[in-house]
Image 1: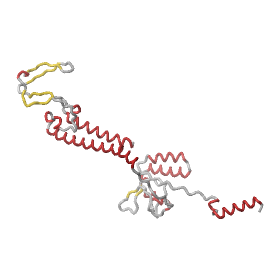
Image 2: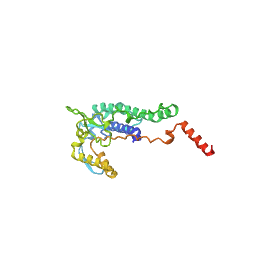
Image 3: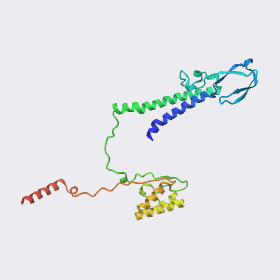
Image 4: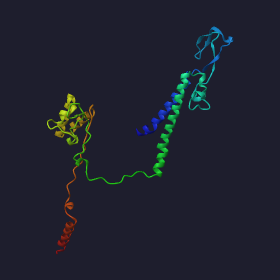
Length: 277
């Protein structure tokens, strides 16, 4: 996903801009440009029969005064020298383009140039400059050490629990299942009612039933049932909130309870006892 976002998407945007500008400028693709002169009398004909590329006969009628056409190359992709950006002045677009088509092609052409420069800067920054920065410059290294105070030990810091404020209500409405978190992280409490009274999940009967079943399974210590309820909770339309409290520190060992002096004295007593002193 990161590779696609950093390298593939910019390339796709450039390809789209190229295709749009060149195809728009090549319209109508018939390679025929109308001239200001009328057709010669030698070509005037009525109900003549011609053959198309598939070999089928077609009827052709050329009236006197019809405009004359000549071949003109409209494929901007194959222009030599290459037409970049594909502007009307570079490809003699006034021969087959309308005024509106020429104005739009100018916008698309310079937009293509801007996207091309942006994609080039993206690749230079993420390949060349990143390589130089990694090999020739020092990177940031954080200094300091972790404090002994843990988040769970701080009394006035609360967690982010999804809730919405309701007009005219003294308490906000919860929009997440709080069965597995410490209620002290919510940041407020109702002395008269439980948090379920202010939880919008309990307004939906099916969700309320799943939450109650999940609480019962967790209370019984049924891991299979709680896992099923967990999958159902993740598929819920409401928000999800979780809490991972730190584990309590292990109890101190005997050596940690005894000071260095007492430990040294105990070793001396043990040596004296072995030597029979």
